[in-house]
Length: 200
Ligand SMILES: *[C@@H]1O[C@H](CO)[C@@H](O)[C@H](O)[C@H]1NC(C)=O
Ligand SMILES: *[C@@H]1O[C@H](CO)[C@@H](O)[C@H](O)[C@H]1NC(C)=O
Image (cartoon, rainbow, N blue to C red):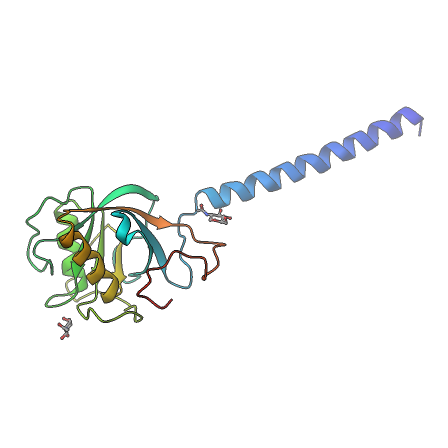
């Protein structure tokens, strides 16, 4: 081969190599940007921004039996406590476009989620009615009614729910401001901003 041809072949090889590299990097970025699953070992996380006194990272267990996963990361969204708190009947306070916290008990997890969705809530957080529970995340199952829900539904430790509710009452606030879900991939467990009263 002539010197010029060798040179051309090398250039072509480099060109192909870098094209492939670019395609690889680009496609792996596409794969992660659309992934808002953010579930680690079956749990995901939200953080309270306001009020500051309960501004921690909280752990949730999403229902896999009903409801849907988050399709976007909600930023600075209102977290409102349902009235009635157990949400076994239609919710009476204004919860439109908010994440809604309800208490476990007296009706199915699905009924509570259904009532949150009907009142315009964008996600249901169901906290344990055992307000001392600071470590058992329940796997919420559906009921026999086959009703459809198309919002996420997540279980929260009873202790966390009780502390959030108590603090909002004390400060006479009708809502907290939260980010949900949040990405704690790569955050070491001992660095996570967990509430001082929980163990994880
Ligand atoms: C979550 O954070 C990790 C580590 O920083 C990052 O690689 C990943 O792309 C992030 N995921 C999302 C959905 O933002
Ligand atoms: C919590 O709710 C469950 C399910 O409805 C019920 O079996 C249990 O007795 C309740 N516990 C308390 C402490 O209210």
